[in-house]
Length: 89
Image (cartoon, rainbow, N blue to C red):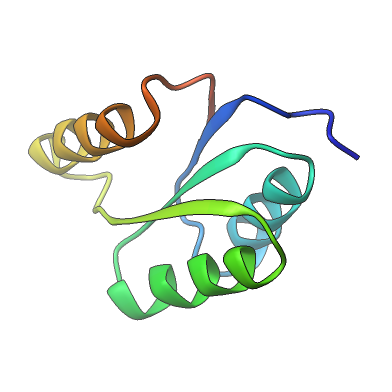
């Protein structure tokens, strides 16, 4: 464990399925994870799971089909963590 210590990962579609599993795995490996999804409920649930397991996560509601929402999401992640190292979408 710890292969991603110090890295910042943005995971889109992270509220369910492969995206959710990826977000949780990256957090378990030490990454700070930005959990992106279209629904606040899904985002909050995954962030809570990660934090409860001892990880670091930021929830961002974002529809990746909308350019202005992508820009706002990136700005939010960079403001919180200083950079983005990994993007999974």
